[in-house]
Image (cartoon, rainbow, N blue to C red; front, side, top):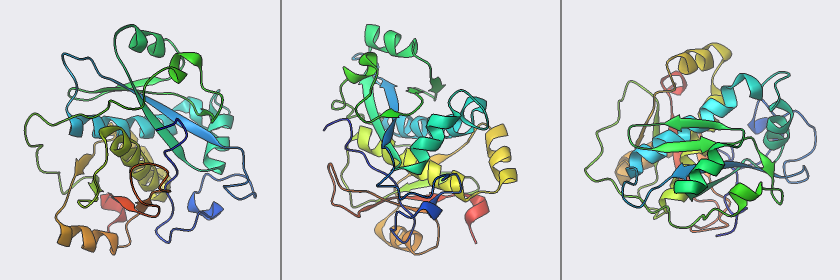
Length: 249
C-alpha cells in the first residue's frame, strides 16, 4: 500500500462537495485543490504491541486533538496547512514505528496521544509527495494488531465510532477510518459541543455492531464514512458511522 492510498471521508450522500466541511475555505472542488495527507504514526514494539481497539480509539482522538489544537486554527503555525488539507481530499495515512524510528518521528513537530496501551503521534498535513524523510521511510504494512481480550461494550451515553461488520480491514486502515469518522462528527458539531468534547478529553468508543444494527445506523442520518477504495476495500464502501450524543436526532 503506497502512502497516498487512504482517501477522504465523504458526506452521507457520497458527494465530495465543498459543503461537506464547515472548514472548507476555498471555492475550488476537492479534487482540483492541492492534495495533502495527515500522517499518523503508531508506536508498535515487537514485544509489547498495543491492543487493536485501543489503537483505533487513540488514532481517532489524535485526529481530534490535531483539529482542535491552537496551532491548527486561526493564525496558528499549522492553520494554513490544515486549511489546505481540508480544502482537498481528507487523506490520512497510518504508519508504524518502533525503537529509534519512533524516537526520530517523535522529534518532528506533532502531537503524541496516549491511550490505555497505544501511542499515536499525529503530524501537520504534508503534500502527498512531500513527506519528511523520517516518516517516508516508515512502513504502512505490519499494523495488524489484535485485542488480547474482548473489548468492553461501548458507552451508549457517549460518542461511538461504529465499524462496518462486513469489511475486513487491516488495523492501520481501520485506524485511518476511525480518524475519518471522528472528523466527520467534529464537523457536524456546534462550537459549544466541540468545546465540551475537547474539555472532556475527547472520550469515545469504537465498536462493531451486528448486521441489523449496522443497517439501522447507516440509515439513521448520522455521518457515514465512504472510502475511495484505493486499497483493501471496494470504492464507496461504508466503513464507519460516527455516533455522537449531540447528533442523535
